[in-house]
Image (cartoon, helix red, strand yellow):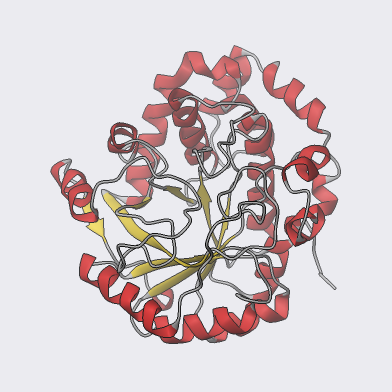
Length: 373
């Protein structure tokens, strides 16, 4: 039984009313949020992501840049995803791993895991994100715990993006060396959530919604939030993400937090975004999150283009992946399995790092030690 739950906060808001409040934000609301001293509240965030705020994009950029440099300095933390398995029992309409895609599946053996580790370490990484599909039998708690056990000797920081688990399972993984868990709600639109997740455990909206609470109670070092931008109205989904972050910061104040910005990219099945999001809108959103919370880590993956990533890392982003493969065994093998999604920025990690350094930034390969927090 959870001692706290975001569900009670979430149920106080109505999706349509949230959309209306955001879209009806005025120029004065935007200016008030931009000029506010002290911590912002979720209602201020509404103004910063509103259509009215598009006329103040330069102000958002300048304030985001200033806050980021003050809080994080000229550093960009580098991480890389490592896919352990593409097995999945869920049917998700937008994902390459979806059970409905009848393509070859693979789960890495110990030897294959260590081969991937060797290649990734040679790139310079000391922060790794482990990813699987959601299959509690083939890649359940025992498989994941064992994978962390053999991987943690090689990396300073291990993050995980897999199926939601119980508090006791997270406690077990933490004891094996897990530092961070990313759990994306995909969309906070409860009514339409089932449309995108018709079958499998992922179809349980509330269980997924309360995952961050279970993580907080388990004592995880960092929790990552996000939605799949393009499934539903990105402004409303982003508001609920900010609301969730605001609640977690107050409830589990010892825990650190990150926000990711996955825009829908092509995958198996050629799913088309219902609500496409432009690069300028993504820029607005990233700056809004930085102004909303100066301490949160903002992360950008290789889903985005080289041109966009080379601009945005100076303006609010603090963490980036590079040289990513989104299929199991993709680093050490030339035989690629089913990918979760197609990447856009296909440069090597060395090439991305060189661009970052050329702008006067320091590339940080190792996440900050937990003992230093």
